Each structure stands twice: as C-alpha cells, then as structure tokens.
Image (tube, rainbow, N blue to C red; front, top):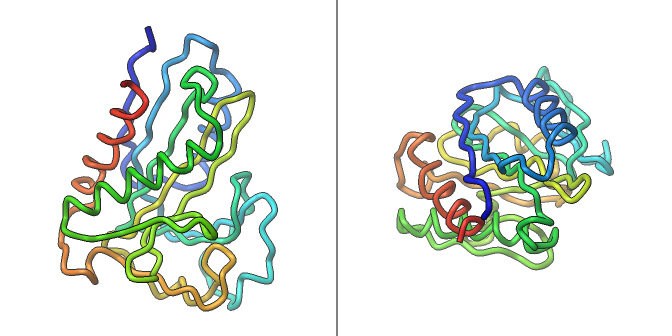
Length: 204
C-alpha cells in the first residue's frame, strides 16, 4: 500500500530556501518516504533552468536571477502566483518523466475548468495555455527516480516582469493570469483543485 501523500502549506517563502529544502528532502528520502506536495508563493524572482540560456533574459532589473537545477529555460515567480512542488517517487508510482509532466499540466487544466476557463497543453511547448497565452508553467528535476520542482499558475500577480524575459525560452510568448480572465480568487483557493487532482492521480 502506498503511503499517504503529505501536504505542506509553506505560505510566502524565499525561492532559494525552498529549493535547497527540496534537494535535501529528495537526497534523504527512502523507499518508505511518503510523497509530498508543497504549496507556496515566492517573492519576485527569475529562475533559470539547468540548461537555460542567459540570452533569454532581455532586460536587467533589480529582481534576482537564480540559476536552478530544474528543466526548462527562464521563468518568473511572484506573489499572486500559485507554486506547487511535486516531490514524488516516480518509480513507486510507475510513471515516467513525460507522464509526470502531463499529470501536472492536467492538474492545472482541470482546476482552471472549474472556474470556467478553457485551457490546454501544447506538445511543442510544455505548460498550459489559454487562447495562445501561457498561464501555467512547469519544470522538474528527477534524481534517483524521484521528482522535485513542479508547476506555477498565474493567478493575480503582476505580469510586467515577464516582458523582461523570453518566457520559458520562447520569444514573443504572451502570458496571462486568472485575474485577466474575470476570475478573482485567493491563490490559496486556487491551490485546492490543483492539489486535489494531483493527489487523486497518484493515490488511485
């Protein structure tokens, strides 16, 4: 029997601190360690993936840029954006990296549908889109068959700093947020359907 998934509500937390905590958790976990889902928001920060190119940062600013160890290129985090980290033993769940990405995308798509927003994934550019604009991003790292990092979903954040980068490495890619789609909710409320789908998928 799989151990029950542990949920952690971290609140607003420094990106680098949470990243180091994820690395430590993954390094120390055993075959018996329950999977965990961490729900958080971050102060303004740009993060650049493991093989990310600095040329996708178009404009200097006072927002910190952190080179991290997830997949993908450059993205932006700020308060008002839901961040869900997926710390799972993929071998125990018998799913591969691509299935894990799809699981995160579907969690966002299903959650958005509950608010009347039709979103979809794209095979050529991981993430979730509404009418061609990106609303949800994801990036993962897998070590010893276990994942960390996860997804970010734009709720009511300031989108301006996305114009300082090529979001996820795509020049000219527009971004959007729930607040621009007529949905006004607390970010912690948005976490509920996203996390519900993830838990349902991995515990079923």
